Length: 466
Image 1 (cartoon, rainbow, N blue to C red):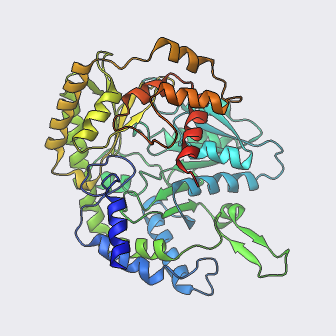
Image 2 (image 1 turned 60 degrees about the horizontal axis):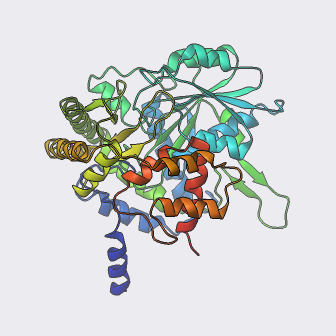
Image 3 (image 1 turned 180 degrees about the horizontal axis):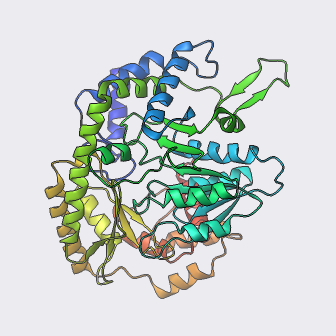
């Protein structure tokens, strides 16, 4: 048994660090001693219990109701469901909205272009057409007038973010919700990232606008507990204004000789482990603890944002309202993809984001409480990374390769064409990714979004070889 765990530790050593604030995407670290151990113990106690039937496992029902009640207290009420993560919460919000308007033959939903890609996934899965509306070119916030104009008789849902992932800005929720309400359309606020931390930032004096059920017209909200509630993955809460609205994502089937299947989420069998871990973490940290963690996060965000403004060649995009920062370059004399590589060599992971509409190539930072105290080290390494990228110069793509990419059709891409592109990027089948990604990211940046999607799906398929 010890040998198996040693092997697992060796495998995990290849991963990005999940603690210490050095991975500024994907993970959320409170920095609190003993919290992981508590969560793991709670997870183990309930991991064999099955959330499929709450009457068989009433402990899970109690814990789910407690988690939903905690989220409702922060966000102004509502009834809810615990899901496996933000994407499932967003999917269910779309499904419930579609099922709430069965008379609409060709339903659509109105999204700002900065809405999380989970809504594009929902559009794909549930056949709800996504009407994507460009955001303000400078602030990256949704345009209420344009959103209102996009609503039509077939619109079943309008979406806004609090905040958006890419730039960390809060959309004008009240104006958008009013427009949706005027047309009798549901309004979902994607607060997967901000739902747990923004109310505490408001208590600390930040000018955070209302975005929950206190806003007239808001009918559902998603908030992830595995983000700024610092619970283990994956636990999210989807709140609805009332039980009737929630019913649309429930499922039942008695049309077979077995038990009547009853589901509140997309899943049937659900381990009680994540639920119990989240329940334990919320009780351990408590309201005062979350206020302190929000204060630490705010201090780290403020120092990092101010420090970025002092790094020659960098700027913060938009005016972030929360804990997320998008870092852009003020000129093309160096490449941000190279900066990301240089930061990784220095032990930090910052997430490259490709250009889209008015948003240029940038680096995404998710700042957590664990970043408090290491801001100076991060900023020093960032300055050095920019200097190294400036010395290296911009990354260039061979014109013939760029032309090859431009000619590819994502709908007819062949295995041979993909293999040729891999060869041009210096990759061979099964070789994995190189240590430095700037060249590959520059090549992907040449591809329009639909082609980039197809190329990355092909690459992903190659990673899973069995």
